[in-house]
Image 1 (tube, rainbow, N blue to C red):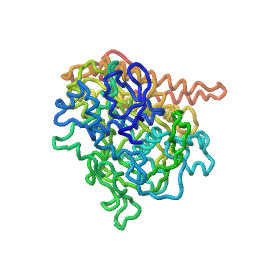
Image 2 (image 1 turned 90 degrees about the vertical axis):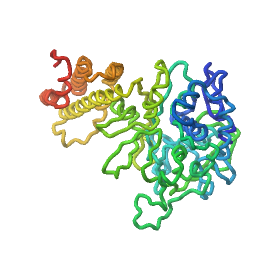
Image 3 (image 1 turned 135 degrees about the vertical axis):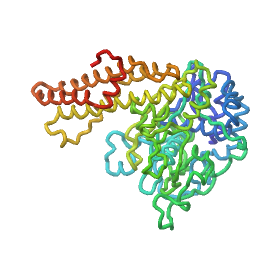
Image 4 (image 1 turned 30 degrees about the horizontal axis):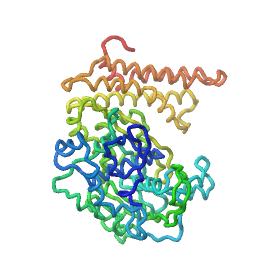
Length: 540
């Protein structure tokens, strides 16, 4: 199968019908495509990244955003244009090339031992889990056959998320299990192309899309740069000999990175795909994998991932992980804008939206931020959870954006203080010697964030419409948020400490913990500062 020439991408059309298309058909005008329809959420995210990478590589707008980018935003390119652009890279997109370069695979890989195709699906039990017979929740042998479409999506998902399968296996250039953030069009009249095009960044005028069939972009076109041995004694984190730095390859390599050495088995069978459920004449049952593939080192920044900068890490940007996609609103500023307090900054495509595209689109266009990713076990290919959520984006000028960063940051910091107070005092109410108890209190944290989330977005929406010249946010918004924090804290404390049977309650300890909580709340500097900005009337 060739991923450019053949139909393999599942989609939903405007009339609700399901279809399977070739990549260039995303711009069809008759009964247009409104959404992808992958059989798994992680596959859906990988498909989006595949199509964005394809457009960015083969069909990037040149010049300023208000030139070609705006032209195609207003009227999508014709199918023939996209077909001609994509067919230039078709030789690099063979799924099985019989010993030649194959999509996201090490075509020279030789291994006598094959792994089941299930090993390619993140979340399936690994070899060590099966060996120890601890596949309690996710059972082995659930996925024995994958059709070509699902195999492709699983392969992309693996390489994009970069999980280390075991000793010697390398993580991706965004680390293990990064969060991905995509700007999406959510309006009723939006089509798939709009959401994809919103994440495309104009290229330099001298960029030549005719010369993209290059191993510095598509690493599988050449011998894999392995990291099996390094004679440089000083090398610990990667040198020029065994490591791949951003300056070693084309910047488009970021969309097509290949940290794992994988090769699909040529032994195909007919049957039913165990993920999508469709009958197929060609199903994969086995793959080959080897450690010590590409070792990505240096200051990599992927256009679709937000980062944290830390001085104690030699100023190298640190990609935020998938778990932040499930953290309610506490990371909203860092994912959508710039969190100067925690030194988190949004992805490149999000910055491009704020700085360039926002001023070109209509204010009636509903835009949101789709965040998704795996919460992976540190240093392992074990997925603990899959997270995704839709975050609101607003139409803001530069001054409004600066204001919202400051105001939203204040709201979130005040909530973080309450979370710490609540967690500590609930624990004090539960246990006679809370300092000796090592239990996980994250459930209490999550309950607080979820309970206050609607009020936070209501406040942010009210703040977002204020004129940029506004220097002080209306005190009634501060008051409303202050009361929300206080009331939620008291309610969750009572629910957590008084739900036990009366004989199990230690009322004296509970009352003592509640009094300590009240004192810490009113004496907290952050809360006191926040309260001072509320209306002068009594809010306590």
